[in-house]
Amino acid sequence: MNFQKTIKSEISCTGIGLHSGRKVNMTILPAGVDEGIAFVRTDLPERNCIKADFQNVRNTVLATTIGTNGTSVSTVEHLMSAFCGMGIDNAVVEVNAPEVPIMDGSALPFVNLIKEAGTEVQGKHRKLMVIEREVSVSEGDGYAMLLPWPEFKISYKIDFKHRLIGQQPYRLTFSSSAYEKEICAARTFGFLKDVEYLQAKGLALGGSLKNAIVLDDDRILNKEGLRCPDEFVKHKILDAIGDLSLVGMPIIGHLIAYKSGHRLNNLLLRELLAHQECWKIVDASFREKSTEEFDSTTIPSFGAIRAVMA
Ligand SMILES: [Zn+2]
Image (cartoon, rainbow, N blue to C red):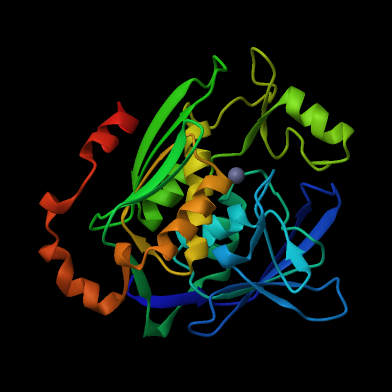
């Protein structure tokens, strides 16, 4: 866990683009230490690297789009989640379209690709973003906050009026095995009336029952049903892991989120980085020695933790 990792060999897949509905080829290649995750559009004449960084997030409607110098790649969040979930720090992602393929709407196909490629431990320690003080953002009745905690932990609650979703809380202490077992297979979801509206406007043309759970007013339209009863909140955690990974290193802290989404998750990172007193960056080898010294009495906002998990 302390050393940076990349994938062992190049690996490719083909899928459908959520926006365009067209075929997309994607290749993931190994990358050197400290290079992070970068996206390259091979359909453009110039090879322009877009770094997976929260400051490069250009749009969070429908999916997360990152861009620099007039080039962008959309729908990066589930792949980013898979990289974080599987502990991949450095990789180059080539796509021959403006978007990453949506696959089955979860991160499972990407996790399988990474496992097929194999991972390689690199000769340099990771950096970790350790949360030292509470930082929070809110919008409407939704909020997201990061609190000091000795490991990466997520407490998330969704609240939808739909009777098949309602309130779902879920708590995850992050590890690659917990991510693989509990989170990565949870699919994205949407409501039929929204899908119809978007497609009438020429958006989400690739969206279908093959890559999302779709609900009408009182039922789930997918014949196979849900993969697990709390698939909805688990997908939101999958998204949050991908969104927060855009800080560029693993976070050591507790994310508490209520009705959050890509936009609020991105605002949380911007708020965090704007408050230097709330975090410090440490070498992963340093953390090995300091974990036991963590003083749980300094954790603020236990009321907030109880509120979201009630
Ligand atoms: Zn998602």
